[in-house]
Image (cartoon, rainbow, N blue to C red):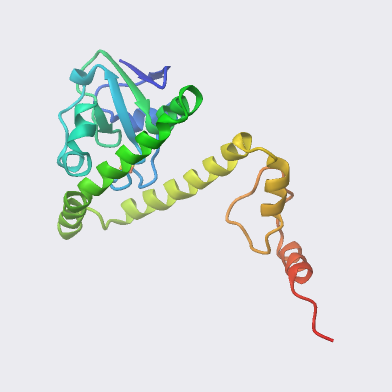
Length: 211
Ligand code: FES
């Protein structure tokens, strides 16, 4: 079974969701809510092979606008591969990256469309979510664990990759690294933080006592 995510061929099998396939193949598809159909970070555009996927789930029908559905939008954590073939998808971050490098001005209309889609689906999305909570589908320990794991993974990914796209990245990361707070992750380019080093920074940054 071929799943091509952002032009990268991934090993997948029937019965997997596109999200799981992306994770197993380390592809850049979001997973912030742990595949619980809440965050839409896993939004992908299906470019080919839509017929190899199960029909839209109720969650997707609630969260995706008619425009997104017509454009081939799916939530990767919800879209299950149902038959052999080739499925080709583009993740949202990759879509944005391509627009940025080919036609940056088009990002304004892209952002406006995304905002409009989100607004349009707020009521059905929240209703769907409340329905699932009421049915006890969202409160499990596993769901919370998945969510926390994904959030920390997403933080890690951002911290690891964002500096590569920043001008003056060393200076910016140096500034962040000198904040007088203990970060829940290790910054690239920084030395490990210890309680003593954090206390030292607080001392340095505290205002001098008035004479
Ligand atoms: S991973 Fe959050 S909606 Fe799919």
